[in-house]
Image 1 (cartoon, helix red, strand yellow):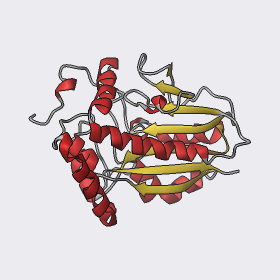
Image 2 (image 1 turned 90 degrees about the vertical axis):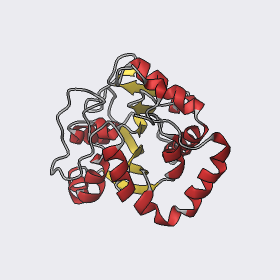
Image 3 (image 1 turned 135 degrees about the vertical axis):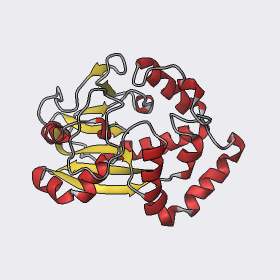
Length: 256
């Protein structure tokens, strides 16, 4: 395709080479880098809000193509794919002691977790009281539904009755609508099953800069000289975020 990112050409989806190329794209594309910096500021602010007298690990799940650890070096990076991060970890079986983690960070990772109920149970177990799950996920706005269902290689199924999905490939088998299914459509179920995890925030994020950057799979559609225009469009379209946002920031907090 015309807009396909050439830096990913010939690379196996989900391979260490794929993730290395995606991290390079975040550094190389000014618009994309700024988007990720904004996201990471939100994640780290969530961690900073955890009571200071509750020490614990900072853990990123699905670190493959992430650059979060460059902003905070005491974060333990993890992924299900060997070689993609400092440690292989399955979010459904977290290898951490009870009440030993201050924050779990996920960027574009939740929708890759099959049997996500197991992850929530594990998060509830390992977090310190007041600890957080802080994530950036695919939103469920009209534009996001169109964009991620048509122009992104992963599935987007907002009609399924189930949270679970079958996974034979850690990257290709996913459901990008999962965060909306869990935290909006089925919120009552989530709150009943995981009463220790409170949905503290669902916040729509700026969209145009990410779209214009091409993200980590497509070419940028605006030259760097028009970066300022992208920020301006993000600002003036904030009132219609529920229509156009591509991502949202979600904070879950373990009860004290």
